[in-house]
Length: 194
Image (cartoon, rainbow, N blue to C red; front, side):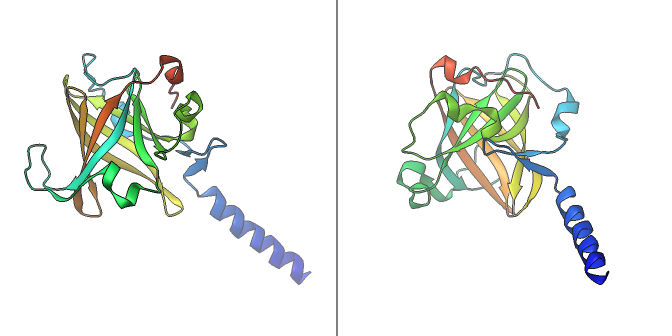
């Protein structure tokens, strides 16, 4: 009798813990919110003439810490991804934008051969973006961190084939420079449905 009560209490506690998770782990390897609640979707500020490339990808090229503006000359820990020891054995972020103002971030190791399967939206982090004018975007993504999910906002500016993204990371301002790359169009014929 006591064993049954202990077992029932334990099952109730475990059920409560797992039902409180705000995210799901997809079978393809991505972490998605159970019920996406992106605040940028409701803002409706989208410029149809955005220069963001939706038929290619953006690969992380350089990172540094600096001030909270795009023209800052202050650069601490300025590193090229190809030279950075941190990225030697770790995946590199690649961004893929869609026409419906959604985007994915995929984490792909440098030596990985690019294929269509890598760009399955369910294998990456998901986000939305808002285009304020033809060259400035605001981004919001869902991150899985330490067994919980959270929404992170950042902003970017597009200059030719470059996307410069600024985000606040642990009370510091992180700058990430992404370079546009072309991939075969059939690799990107996935749909963003979140």
